[in-house]
Length: 373
Ligand SMILES: *[C@@H]1O[C@H](CO)[C@@H](O)[C@H](O)[C@H]1NC(C)=O
Ligand SMILES: *[C@@H]1O[C@H](CO)[C@@H](O)[C@H](O)[C@H]1NC(C)=O
Ligand SMILES: *[C@@H]1O[C@H](CO)[C@@H](O)[C@H](O)[C@H]1NC(C)=O
Ligand SMILES: *[C@@H]1O[C@H](CO)[C@@H](O)[C@H](O)[C@H]1NC(C)=O
Image 1 (cartoon, protein in one colour):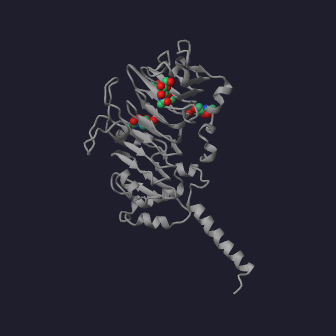
Image 2: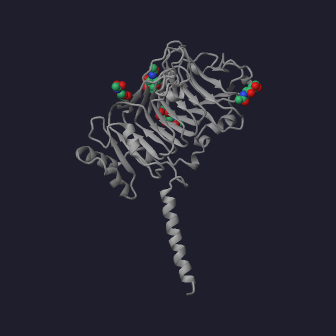
Image 3: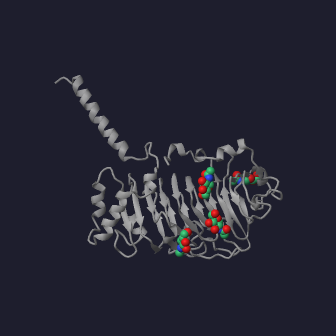
């Protein structure tokens, strides 16, 4: 009846195998987002061809896919009904709660008029459209802050979003997020969010985020926006997140005045902020680079090409002079007529290399911990 060392060795192996299995299933443990999560490979395209070709593969197909080990799960959305779902929300609904593996939702070209919500219980979702033409796959809705919700309450800015992402490890590529409300600058209740990202650790690659006032609610978490296009008029990138915008086009659509970024930060110890690197800032109007929403708002532009669309003072303290001492607004090595700092508010800063350094690469969003691009 002795429990000899051989048994201990065997038992250790069993425990080890179970542990490794669990770790592989639980991607959150040491898991990093890679290009594989953001793009479609040949296998994925083959899956699309099969799925769209065979009309009777629908329900149950997703379950069959779950059994396929070692591959990403895959759902096809086609507005013409040849996919697994005709709507994006339908695809999200097919994913089980507490999902622990990457699921790619491939959205075929088309205009999807729907409001999409990805709940916090569904992490590891990739929403992928056409990687070479993001404008061919469009998710659009038209709620605004002053609208009345079904429960009779005023919707408010946060709930106006066409697409809301509350889960972690979200990725999107080659897709357009739009809010179709056309808010006149200066009007009230017209805030209309196209995309709200409130999950932690998200990547947006080659996406278009289009609206007018409050287009992109970069709400909470660490996010990477790469080679993407963001269009709006007033505070069109706003929120409390810690985000890096690299090689993006930031497009002002106002005919009069407006503002690009409004970052909210309440304490000098928060690691949040918006850092724009090597972005093109163009479009129309005269806009501010940023507004201090919260005492310690932090917004930095580095190596950006800025067209002649910037209101010369450049930055606003939101009418709170005390924020002149606490907001962190900086510019480093930007080019173009809009980068002229001659008439900037004196409390904004032309950064030295050492001051700019923490904002100049992926280290700003601690990418080494979660991003393997
Ligand atoms: C989509 O983008 C392409 C390339 O940027 C452009 O040529 C085309 O006109 C756009 N189409 C629409 C519908 O906006
Ligand atoms: C800056 O952005 C442009 C346009 O997206 C890109 O071609 C270039 O490689 C970028 N430069 C650096 C240093 O990342
Ligand atoms: C903004 O910059 C992008 C990238 O350089 C360019 O394709 C686009 O035409 C520009 N738009 C305007 C209005 O200058
Ligand atoms: C912001 O600063 C003002 C002036 O110092 C202070 O009265 C206010 O409480 C601060 N707000 C927050 C949220 O800390």
